Image (tube, rainbow, N blue to C red):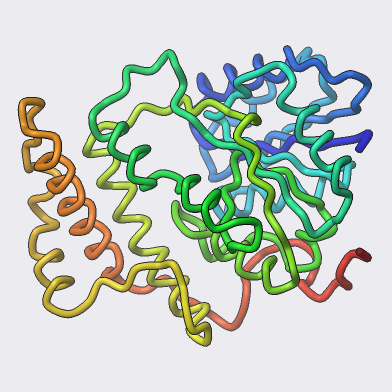
Length: 322
């Protein structure tokens, strides 16, 4: 590939975004033409102006767009629609490249296999400058953030992908309609996209050398609030894909689900002291996170509607030629 478009959704995290943008300025492109598209999601007064200031003078051609609705899914769709290249690299505002050859590494990986129905995914790893909290350690060990171990074990045909660190052909995204903007909050938007892509024969190549840092510190409270959002999105995904026999999304129900929902109001107040034995601490984390997931799952339903909301193209574009 001789061109690549880097798409970054951002919402409020201007300092993290500046670090990611600065890291991209240090990329060694070896003749590769790259552009930077930063999309401001939501309606935060003055945010797009601060983002424009952050990218001013950047060595890569850079554009700043605004997408008030649709969350990060809508922002990514807007970036893809504006992209000049067919090859898209997604980053988050808090995921700077870990090396100076990340961008060209993605392009070269696509040169090795030019099938437009093949994506390349690198891991997101906690940024070395962060003080890793116990819950962050638990999230990475258990795959509660991103399950890369499962992806490696199950191979290219597994419908799993994560947007940060993913490079993918725009033509494949357009063919399936892009991200479904009903998944406007955190959780399952990428899995929904993966299901639609893999229905069309998509494959994902996991490249552990193409690392991006995750410049985001989580406390236990942060992680529990995130899990509540994951629960709400799981409810939506299970309804959107109700005709499928097997889904990776949870369905907290029965006595276990009811007990978890009863615990949820107290979950953010339960102390998990540092002296607690490791196995007991892990079990406590699992219980508290499941409680918040169950509460999110039982909240008033996000309307599933009659098909995708937003998206790119019409989802009916012909499949790229193999």
